[in-house]
Length: 306
Image 1: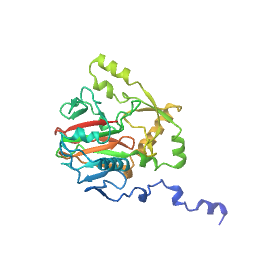
Image 2: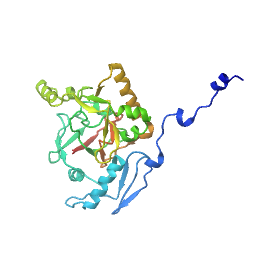
Image 3: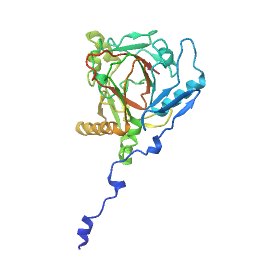
Image 4: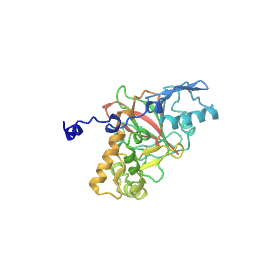
């Protein structure tokens, strides 16, 4: 047998010739209990479920409990609180446990609470850009750190929120690809998919909104300031192009990033119930809604938190 033929039949090294997988030991979180509060993993990679926490009106949360919840949020990327943990009257105080809430709505997402929250009501919300993968306000110079939602009315079925852990997705990358992506920058545009144009029906208000949010340069990979984890930052709703690359190459790079972000290993799908509460770290996860609930009512209060 010739040496050429032997060479053609060389076996492949499985470790070298297959895509990377996540090390389960890295993400396998054990349930944690502190002050009667238990947090258990939502999936092996993303999210935590909080049991035993109840926020009562007029009663402050102890500082050690607040710190435990905040550390857990940094660890899990998002936390889900079972119905009854928080209500519509305590939701604004709940958001203050994690930072400073500020109003960040538009004409289709009016103020609620004491004025720093906004309502997301399926009966009046006309835009559907929330069904595209995104990081909240990634087109702004300083995107919000956290987002919280409280369900006043959840659909009987459908209307889920899906998360992807973009720090875990980064760890799926080949080392050479990751090193190259680390060097790139992109342009984020709040109107890339028409969000701003559809949110402001009056020309003068639209002009003002566009003036406030011009296209913005940002790193393709951003580093979490508190954990040091690297996050794949481009999102389908706002990413316009990668700087320094031809148009077609830029599109391909973004498609590659989006493919990693859609990897099943890093996804988590949350099913809403009346009275449930979610909070997530935009520096860790991307998210999107699912429009599969027809004409059912879906009303959420939202807190944007810095």
